[in-house]
Length: 240
Image (cartoon, rainbow, N blue to C red; front, side, top):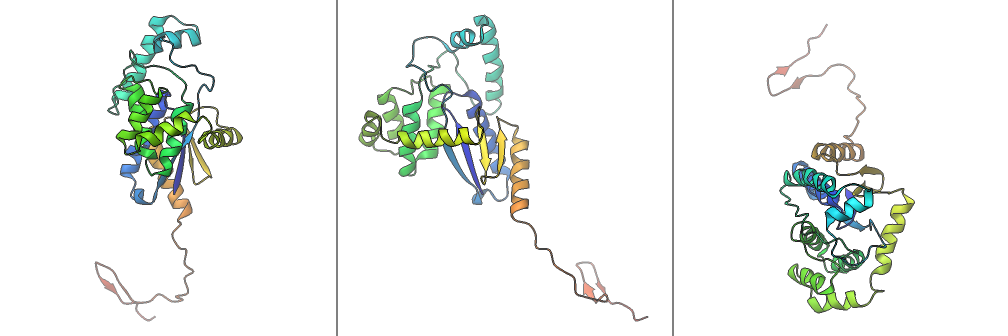
């Protein structure tokens, strides 16, 4: 079974959705046969580098609300994250463009470090307040998960490297109607939109597995009832 996950590193529900999917997989008996692949999605492709504006101010400006109301919304969201062991630090978050982070993750995938870097980027943004568009920061994160720092810098400094890989993900998302993230596609046939409860993910995993691995249906050619033994007794049919 393959699960493709479209997400962005500055999307708070993407981190929550990722954790809930992971919780579901921990409970799924066939988890060893599930492959998870992350796909690129930019919430705001035109986002500028960090301007110094807080997340509260950014949200207030975007939705035309008082900063106090934006803080309250973020606190409520933070409570959801905390239930999953994620300590969101809204006061330190630095909203920025994520294109280079996505490019770097595409490179990390070529050396088997996609999942590790994806997790670290989310943690760095939401918990540690790091600027994940800064090349030195990104190279340091890559190095900490086992990617050569200089190789990471070489990718980041060449805007064309892995750019097409990111754009392919985004174009496909548009083709299948993805308008928001997180968005999950199972075996290219089933979709789950949003950071659904863990139980929803688990139910979906079980349903897809059963549909694609049905129990064999046998045609009974026994004719008359035959003698059988169970764990309780043996039954011998009587002749009439």
